[in-house]
Length: 237
Image 1 (cartoon, rainbow, N blue to C red):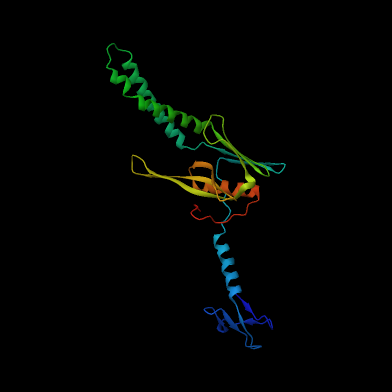
Image 2: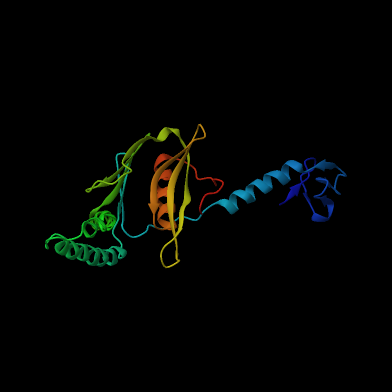
């Protein structure tokens, strides 16, 4: 921070500046003046510099299309983890088929043998559908001047929505899920949320697997909507 005398304009050396009392003295013209405003402006400037985030590079699986002032962001769901899930689903579902081929293929099979795997069947159906979606689906985000549309295609998935983007004050990422799996490992996912001008919070996308992906989507949507990024308390950065 550099302090100049408001009377004669010369730069005041650090030895003539008292930060604790926010007073400086000019040895050139003997003026004594307050520097509180200068200290606050310098502190604000440095705070903004510290909080400014570097541009986030585009992750793999993202396509950006701009036309006529509108922007479309397409995110492919596929990652190598879906191959692992595919083999798991094949093993899980094959076992259930084998089980029921015995349960219904023999006479006088105990009823408990037919009822017991029902929960496993539900898990198998849900996990198989999730895995197929991972191979086929894309999330399409379409942005206009005052609109934001989110669609998951071609297979149905919760989260399709339309928003009035003119009400958005800020976008931010939130660490969404910490839970222990059977191996004791911690799983973390991220939500992309919007803070509205009336103080509400709206979830736009949930369950994003990587922070860099969530931050990139935040960055591109804010850019398309003309929103200047600011820190939000509790956000993941």
